[in-house]
Length: 311
Ligand code: ATP
Image (tube, rainbow, N blue to C red):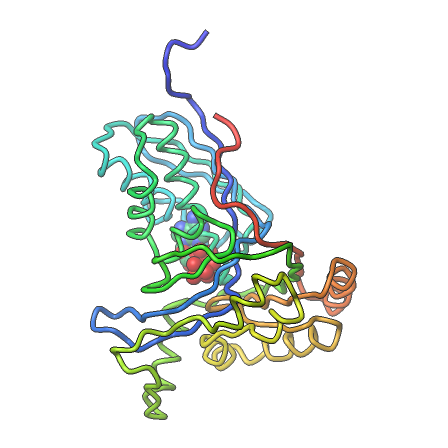
């Protein structure tokens, strides 16, 4: 029989994401950009287990390349746990175990999913009962994509990407993801975009005009029509990512030659997300890309945000 109301271990699962649409506004004075994003959470998950402990530690396992994942205090999961402890006055620590399935530095928000899962896991483990709205605020402090990993589904993100409003999406979309064996740094890709815009005096979004998600993206999501959505996939970070890693152009072309409705760099890349018409075409595309010696995973979306699997 347990004597305490709080559990001694909690398991939370949080999804990776694809940016179906990403428009970048002007560089703001605080060094960030205004963005307009259509996010979709996809069925590649991070499993975070939190165990009672006196101090903070993290262990990482998984099916993806793990060499770029820190296991010290710079791991975003540790930062999430410490932020929650600070903001609630909780005095203990936590031992975290992360089982990663989202490609690292792939533009699919794996670290953000870890942070979101950790917030939820520690809140449950510690019995701190932080209201949902406050949890979302803490998530935004940790990173622009962290609130979306909590909410999941399909959503529009504005501001730095952290001001979320849900988007209606019907049915399921079939994604095939070509995962690179290298990472791309998000700040480096933004820097490349700024350099390009400076060189071409191309400040297309005056500071007073925030970027928005095109209406036809919302319509395609609402209709649940992959053909319509394929026509609207868009990413302002694609050109700078391809400039930094020209080999990715051939990957996009290969996918589109092998039945993908369209391919787009996800977030700051280097993962290329291909949208397929249905499960059969997704399977065929997966086989074709694998035959070309690419690392490929399949995923469907939308899926749930971070949720408790066991406590
Ligand atoms: P996003 O799509 O949100 O821009 P990403 O998917 O491109 O992110 P991540 O895999 O989330 O990138 O991590 C980016 C960097 O953060 C890595 O270089 C890594 O060193 C650092 N990092 C810190 N904590 C983690 C974590 N738990 N998992 C992965 N990377 C982490």
